[in-house]
Length: 259
Image (cartoon, rainbow, N blue to C red; front, top):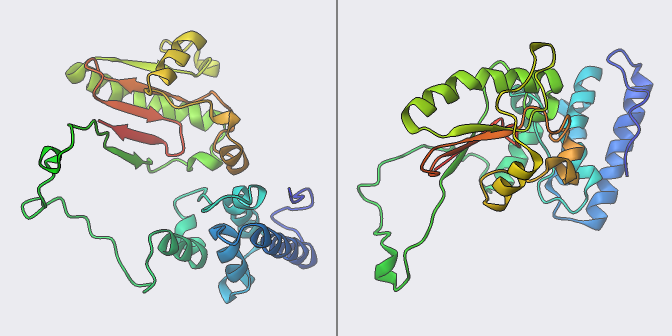
């Protein structure tokens, strides 16, 4: 079900806001009947009945709905939510904290992530000793830049601005590792043509080679979340000359860094 947001404004009256919240609660219950494993619906239901949820301002209700929209429109989701800005993780902390802890299996509710790159005491990862052949492995991290909305909240202009922000960094990488930028952005608007634009045929070859991500606009989960909006503006990748390093831009995270 797609809930109507036609009457929602930042200055909507209390009755309108409450009716919409009631509609969201009803939809959460309906989704959970279909898929009890939908974390978005489960914790949204708890959140909107909590003190924090009940005291959301009208503007925050609208933002929160954007965060949970994909989980409600796609009941088979197991996670089903995306922050629209970095501040959402704290503004709607009572919701996101529970979703994240559930996803990572933290039943205690008080675990904290500790980054530790020390491998001195690590196990022996030589797969040959396990009787297996050598494996191909890709290491990937997601990163987002300060000063930009997260992908679900970005509009076309901001997506183009982000791509242009990254170009000097890609230039530095190309000085050291070579390669090129493969961009899907048709044009840079008032700024002019995109010198890194590739053809549809080139794009498909990169997809087939697992270098570039697939058409995001064909993904109903990303579409509901607003992440695939304005496709293909602001989307593309840089790949090094030896093809061992890849950076996606404009996917679920602003950057996916792989090697």
